[in-house]
Image 1: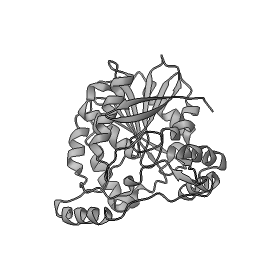
Image 2: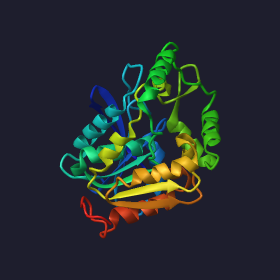
Image 3: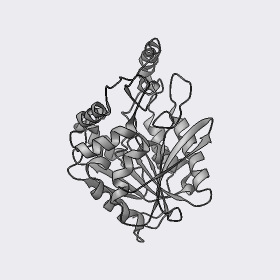
Length: 303
């Protein structure tokens, strides 16, 4: 495995942890993980990159080794503000290549439309977003949130790091023993009682009281000036989150029309955690896109 270094610094009253791989003077690829994941999750993709890159992968607030706020809920705009501060810290003047998986894909795509001048090229990995919501859902959503606040959320403890690895493999049966063992050491930590706890704030488990207003998201996507690579897995389970494939596929295709410069790719023999399942295939597709001179960074003409 390629070695990484870590650094910590303060962002908006949080102690942020970031992992770095590669040559600090090489072009930057900034990678954001998904929900209940960590920056180390990109290790297998980094190992598969053939070219010279400086890869930076933070643990987002409340995940991994980055602290979270003392709060009942996490608000999505905070991730955008954190990313803005991270990019200002690591690349204050130069646009960066930005990659995001799942929730991280949602974050990077929205941000790329808010500050399009900061992005050279954008890669969205399984960043479909959430089901479309209607205003009429608000009363029940707020009520559910209030009900959940009456009980303090907690993470289930595991007896050993082996149990953590087995939990990861239960979620993703494609995960090899070796990969699961690596991820488990970064996904959880042992406490004073000898139990292993997931490195994620339990508050992440609460329902968000804020509806997912997809038209606002699409309005941000329309402002993106960078070329976009949209990557899906051929065996994704994401459709179950957005109403099944019969509803999800047309809705996803509708959403994709809001990108001005779009290249799509499918990773074969992979599920939602495609960066674990097929890192070599994904790394090759990403490098082809990021280094291709026929896809000019930061241009606005259609492909």
